[in-house]
Image (cartoon, rainbow, N blue to C red; front, side):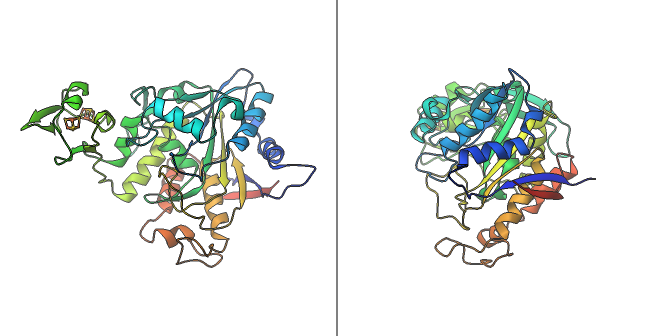
Length: 369
Ligand code: SF4
Ligand code: SF4
């Protein structure tokens, strides 16, 4: 199989070309015009950052992505799906407010923000993929309905997948709440009895009548529960939580299979960017972001979602670790920085499985722009 091309731009700029202009040139050289047709509704999938996090991609750089798509005649909108946990992005109202607080206002990014899975994360399309583990995926409806997809991922460490890049931005990030729970756990949510005050809100909300009150505490009937995850969000006392039981290889494989589902129907209509900047050790879903584990590197672009993640992890590992970070092992150039932060996580699983199921290729040629 021929190698994929991954285009790389470092962060050097001059009076002749600033970073937003360089970013547009990167997109052009990586072939973005080949995936855009006039009046395409273009979902630009990114992470707006949890409240308190500061490592997410700068909104002014997202504006450059938007402008390039508009120049090609597309109708871009910025999007993400609601989170599984009840943080500052658990429903569309909180999510949009957090996005604007983090700088993603219309006046900055020049595009509307649409939370793709509806008010409470229940708006999804079932996408049949019949893979080894996932048969049907639950993908945020507006991402499925968009004519094309541009993934703009902030590349960083992740406690379950080693790193989070394009595959994570798509497979987990585009899943509706039910799809996220599907990837994180094989079990129904659990009730923390000490926190439950027996208000009954979850009982009323559960469409499957899977929750009842016993001795003034909520009880979930595993047989009735379909794993939509909505009760986690509904409980005013945060008394319902995910049973984080997913084993790591299974989690990564499911995430790759969900990526396949997100890209189904968008063959030749998807483009990927990874920002290798503020490479924090953990996900932007936390309300803080620890010091970067390596210096800023640049931005990569590709039409291959596997090659771009492989190239990104290689570029990170070529760097020496930053001294004032949590990275205390594998700090030399060439050593595995993500193994350094998460010694037990084998991040190759997501890439191997993604390649196996035909999403893309791990082999790549790096083209410097
Ligand atoms: S909504 Fe929360 S506090 Fe109220 S009954 Fe359900 S679990 Fe208990
Ligand atoms: S996850 Fe959904 S179906 Fe299951 S108990 Fe909660 S609300 Fe009901």
